Image (cartoon, rainbow, N blue to C red; front, side, top):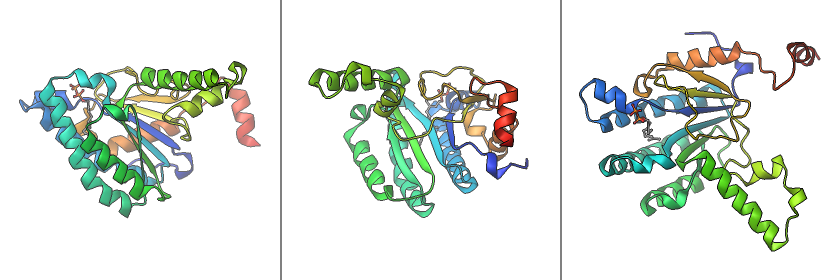
Length: 248
Ligand code: FPP
């Protein structure tokens, strides 16, 4: 396995877990089997990220747009999510993981919201990795909700328009309090952001792999992390400036 520098891991890793459907279809299996295998990959990646000491892991589990998939697939995904959350709670408690959710939670079935509330409460004081699931999540919808929240405060008179700045907007997003992702991985060869974390990905390093999510392995994860470690992040500055700040 590739040697990783433990001091240069992403503080926040975000993943678009794509290709479950194609993985299944290539094997003449129903799409849901791909999602089931995908859920196993989720467990592996959560364990690995937490063991490596990555502080934040955010997974795109269900997008705002995924509601328009065929009803049986949406139902199957919700059933899978329920099963996953029930199983995962034990492992989160064992691994000191703090659970978190972003997205339009109101759209989720009440039963799932109940399980989520329970997982949030039971892991609230854990001090290890923060595992965030994006559920019924869309970046534009999140920014729109934040804008509406801020507009309400202005209308109520508790905020002046001039007080609206980047920090305030970031604090009104679902991700308030989370650092921006350092690395985004997307599987299955698609090279798009697909409405994921639009605000937060401004300076994130992007990593794309052809591998479908159910086939994503520990070795693939290490490959992505090693690639990240080989990059120079400049945040708009010059190479020379970055070398100077690294020396000081
Ligand atoms: C993309 O594959 C994946 C999804 C829409 C859902 C992601 C869900 C999982 C990985 C499993 C459940 C998650 C948890 C947290 C239990 P796709 O169906 O879009 O694949 P395709 O592009 O090949 O059709």
